[in-house]
Image (cartoon, rainbow, N blue to C red):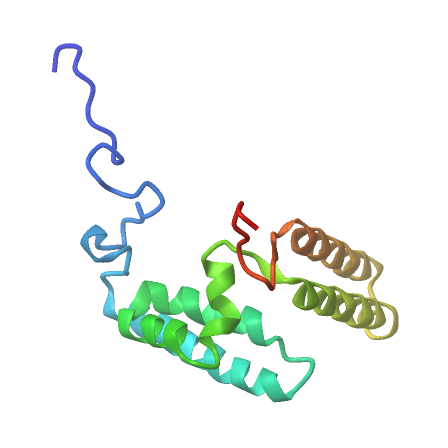
Length: 163
């Protein structure tokens, strides 16, 4: 021990973001506790079901619910996670975002328009407390900024330098 430093978790091949004591690092950060995995799987299935309803009901957000489902499945069930990402209808909705390619311009515009149609209306006509109204408007502003800062998916795909 004289002067030698202990290897960091990264040096030992452990992902520093997956350092939760309740996880098994050999299984991609999945919780060891069966009950936790079961709850995450149930939440993922519920989110997927609500997302499918959101395809038909305009105010139910499809993509955020699918992203929540993907996050739950990534921590609980490799099989469900793979099935969701490879699904012929649902997979294309979230794969570009998860790959870091961004979201389509139309999706950004739709989300921002719906945020500013629904949240201020709720704040003005439904919520009685001033501090809660201010909080809702602040959340709407923060989500809008977040959406604007996300990369925009180019519908034509990556362009080569030769064209």
